[in-house]
Each structure stands twice: as structure tokens, then as C-alpha cells.
Image 1 (tube, rainbow, N blue to C red):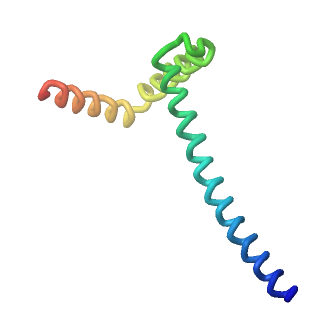
Image 2: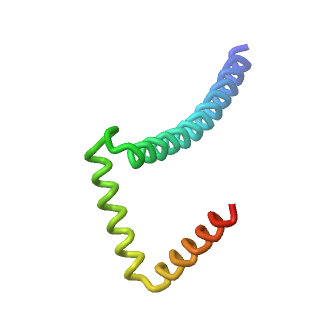
Length: 91
């Protein structure tokens, strides 16, 4: 009888561990989504977190400088802007 109880407890533990792993996976995804949404909100409204907004502005400036220095990236950006302008003018 003790052996059956031990097996049931072991199966319950495995089931609990599997559920916990799945919950942790979804929690990590939700934290990432929440971080992205928070940064998007801060980008849109400086008053939410002025130091973070200023840091994001600096990073955006450095990224644009890097893109402009790279010939391949600058051509890709120009093509993307042209395509966006074409889409905007059609609508």
C-alpha cells in the first residue's frame, strides 16, 4: 500500500512540476511583453519616465548614426522609407 501511495505522490509531483514549468514559460513571455509595452509608452510620453526617455533618445541617435555609416543599412532604410511613402500616398 505504501508503494502505491509513493507512486501516486511521484506522479502528482511530476504533474505539478510540468504545470510549473509551463507557467514559468508564460510568465517570462508576459514579462517581456510588459517591458516592451512600458518602453513604448515611455517613448510616446516623456513624462512617464524622463531619464529613461532621454536614454532612449540617445540610443536612437546612436542607432541612426550606425545605420547612416553602413552603406547596406542606409540603402535598406531608404528603400523602407520609400515603400512607406508609397503606401501612405495610396491610402
